[in-house]
Length: 615
Image (tube, rainbow, N blue to C red; front, side, top):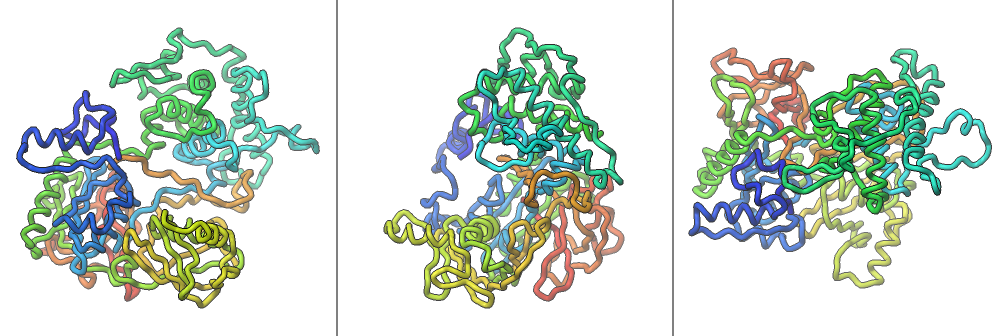
């Protein structure tokens, strides 16, 4: 569904300045036909998950070449290709890294046979009370403060710590984030600033236990930074003309700040904070209440950068430039046209092999950042299917859940959709159909299923309790799996925030675990232990995780029995061959996250190793 943005122009060879705003699929077709006019290309400016792109649609092809930009869509296409029995060639790039993998039903592993990196998550108590990295400040500014000020007012938030006077008062305390009638923008801005950067920090400092082994943060108030000076712009009304000729509202333009790679002082960040807040209310007031952070929204990026830097200053964390902050907030690894071209070429090479049925020469090829054993491209033969994969091997799963507390809605949203990646789940317990979605359902059935969603599992018309087996299907993906239910009373709210644990499949690997834990973990204002995600945005950027050392013979069949049992906690890197058999080992320390490898989950329980694809 993508349209062409200015930032797309530097990393590919089909789009030009005049194409900005147009459909990527349609422009790509037109560009290719200029040098290959006699071929047939049908573009679809649509979502690949639309019902029209079903199994029958995929069956018309000899091979599918994937260049998608998110894990959910990749999993969806993988399942449709399995159902249609059509070969799939997967691909992706991130900076200098990239890969092309081949997936043939019954012959090689499918795209979901091995774990994929999960989005980074951070405990709310770390974000709200004890940040130690700049990324924690970005998540706080983006997912908490920005959402509180400009997003849905009805959503719960963790920023409502009261000042000393308010906390000691028994009277009803107004929400400081609610702008009072006739309250000026500058006055409102200073109230917000002093609340989140001043009073909230003062409240957090009251918990002495939290700061025994941590540096104490410093409360920051607007009067100390700006000394009461009014905010003034440089006369251009906050309008910035961007590369495609359109205009965008910009606090930087208002204040005469030109270089996004400059690191602003605390005073400059404070000015950007106030100016961005003012511009939202003056120029974009109709959007307030419905906004979500977008890395391509200049004003949103400016506000988040300024807020994150002010918080970082409070906690003694080094400040970052807007350019760096935008990359962190959008999870951006800047794309390189050369890598994309190399990977595109590798896709075509594998496609030719598939069309010729040259099974013995299929390769999964990884594009490396540094020359390794005189190679920048490392070919490896595909794995065999993973017998424990619930997608292509129909292995039953196990769900631990409190059947007396969790509702069917929790299962549908957290397990069927979020974890298993189903778009239109159907849930059965024996012959009883408990939940279904579709346009062709009768009204009474829709009402019945809606009522079931609000019931706890053990109180459904056909009760789901410990020891029962349920079937979950997605008719569009033609995927079905059985789930054994195990009743469990209690869950760790910090480690198991969903209140249910699914096992028996290749689970996502967490990319980062925050070690800043303590009893109570600071003065968090949230009663619930949740995790705030830092999600990948819409680009071809891949999730990168560091992992453990592994060995394999390059160019040889990657059977599970050939993988090394050796493990190390050091960062992964690649070194020169140390024996007659070439071995892939670890990257230099300075490139610790460049080559992505993780332990493989095996049915025999042994700890095997494999090269992990990036998302």
